Picture 1 (cartoon, rainbow, N blue to C red):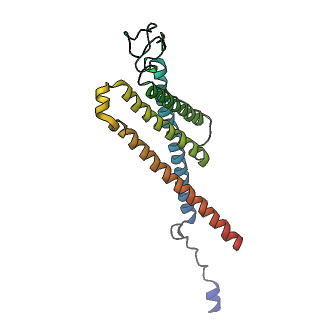
Picture 2: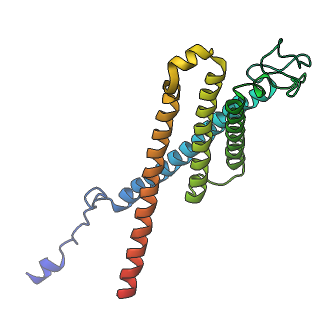
Picture 3: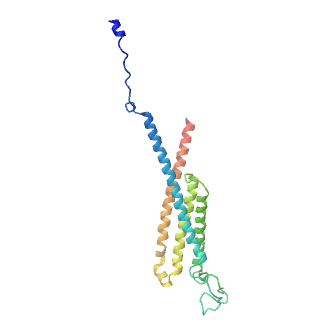
Length: 221
């Protein structure tokens, strides 16, 4: 009986499929592939966003540069110092050829505000372009804060420039009828920008408080 047991063939090894073991190596590869795909898509989205911002900033720069070449109202073609030819001109305030028409008269202050706002929008848009071509990654939080502030400044003063140009070019009777209604678009834009900045400020303060609490807990432990 013992001899028969000794002569029995050894049990055959049954192969176990990877699926029966849960295939841990396959799961890890799948997870790593998903992570890589996510990182690639995020990188592509960031590069696309950089391109979109560059296009927007370039268009705004072109818009704000145009008034320097062809300002609203044009320029005086000849020297005028006779009040009969123009109310804005006189012996004391001579209208020189090549100077801006709106720089004289009752709308002088409005036109000065227009030039200042247009210059700020132009400068801010140039700053956005410079930041985008500087090579800083958009994932950098400090860089994104500066870029966001620059874009908000550009859009705000671009809107104010539009409203002031509107005030300069419409007739005085329509200007009196519209009154403060002309400033509704810029008010809506300012409210929207303030809401966005407030949200970012709250998020920033929340992160600071969270970091402070974390550091305090570590010191206590």
